[in-house]
Image (cartoon, rainbow, N blue to C red):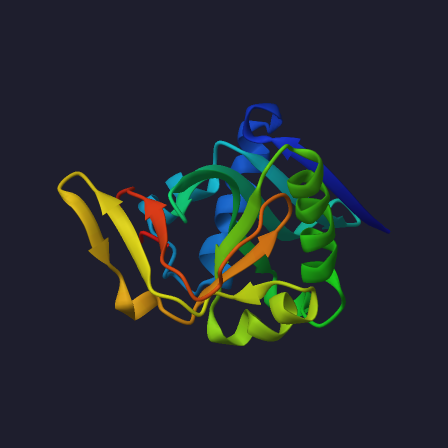
Length: 178
């Protein structure tokens, strides 16, 4: 039996958080850092279980993105992963269904995420749009371009008009900006 639950980080038990971290470590083959973990917590989580066992996860955390002279309240998708032996069964779509529901109902103006190449078909197929303009990060010393991220940032407008060819600037954080 498959069960899908959404919960804030504060509602998850230590055992659930450990299971999420283990899933992410395994799914990203050891390339999931402590900074990546920090980016994943503090918001809403979508957890998919089969027979009580965690098989998929994703989270939505609040960030501010600057675009067109405005700071947009953004729901940023992090930590989307499916256990290797459960892939291609709709679990990532179930995670995104839950997170997109929170995004649309949570007073956000925009959804955003940084997509790995293999995940682009999932997000594009759900209506997420690739950001065509330049990307940047607002660092403690000012705005710095992030050209290595150009083409991998996807957005889902939910409450504001966007110029997908304009500049998009994310708030600074340790580790990966996007």
